[in-house]
Amino acid sequence: MFRSFKKIARSLRGPSVQEREMAYLCESVDRYDFEYRQRQVDQGLFRKGL
Image (cartoon, rainbow, N blue to C red):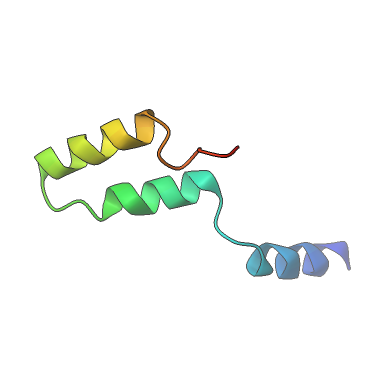
């Protein structure tokens, strides 16, 4: 019973910070873009306000 509730709760929540960071990195088009995005993630682009 609790497993189904956990599944529903997980599907309703927004993406976590790590999931957003990974999605942002996966959108890079080349190595240079990836490195630029990685630096932004390292500087806390997605962690502001936490």
